[in-house]
Length: 301
Length: 282
Image (cartoon, rainbow over all chains, first blue to last red; front, side):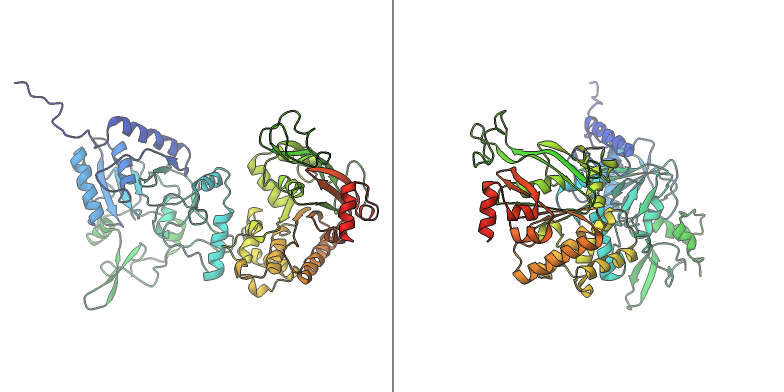
């Protein structure tokens, strides 16, 4: 009997059917054409719940090819649950090579961090976004926020920042600090720490954002201006780690995690697991460069 | 003030707002002659029709009339809170008065609103955002006009609150914790934050008790004298009109039935309805 080879694989390559992939790619093209603009898309069903990274997964699966090398991190770590499960899934559905090495990867999916190592032209960086609408905090109605984006009417956003400065002395947004993309749209960079915002500015890589539950895609093309919102006299500043250092490497020009050991002592460790491994093994690393990083003193103490 | 055909600040011609589908007879079948603004043929409602007037720099124009006469509609149309059915308006400081402001894009309208106009509503909840502090509300207007310096914004906001006699210590409190008179003062501060040449006051003293009313009116008069802002004052209260305005238009059923110097209208009202208004005052 002649074997039927057509149905050997139970699923289409990369799980999503080709027509839907095409739809997502077209929406991605639109998103890239209008940096920071939120494009509605179909957000098809996935074998994981919405809100658990479906948006990022849609983007990854719609654009992944057989030659791609895939890396996925969750809060900077290659080894946490969300990252492991999604890596397994993408690998099963595409048989693509996966990696922990930031430099080797061509497609990096992330939850809530930008890698510390600099990204290059051949990489696409994909964010899982829980809340794509930066104005949701000041305006609850979607039709209103769309109109506000359409007319670049961002006064309410600015007043909310003003109010925070008045009440607390500073802008109290740790993660998901609103940024202005290409001098036009205000965008939620997904809940990445403030530390990471300057690293999207003029990045060589393409940054794609997928919000599965909210059914929105948006993008920051390579070499695009991304500025955190700031007043003339109250400026944006990333997290301050000047008095801390990683307990393994002594380095502090990176985003640090706080750890408590069993004896109750407090330590700090580099959040980006691949970066930490490379530091520990003394491998060459090229870090992002931005004006905030360059102002910091030499980290290794 | 010199008045001639050329130095008007705001020129309004044939301003009309109709709710529903009008027929060609709608305008001729409604108005004070019929004592109704509902078209008998189509049931469409004529909120205001054929409003023509010029406002001169620094002048205070009153619009008086009973409830439903269309006086609020006129200022709301001019402040772009609603869209007109017909009509044109020109504002001298905008494009030298060559452009019909009512047909501009939303973005341009917002520019005009933020830089060249101020509005004080009857209900402070319409003019203020109660989720922001009173300073934040004033900051909103300043930010919309491009002021991005927190220090300067706070300086200006406290100046304005001083001027309107709101205690500056309460700048960072929400207006919901203020009395009605204070809310109205915050609203006035916000409206004049960018030194607009034109201010709309829509029933500002309605709902305030008499002593607070008097102080708010005093404040408005002082501001008018100090800053020389042109104002359109909408009120059903002839004593407010008498106190504030130079010139008055009387409206009924969406039309202007009489207009002229305030003193003249109060002393010698010509139209039947104006006579009724004045006699009910005295």
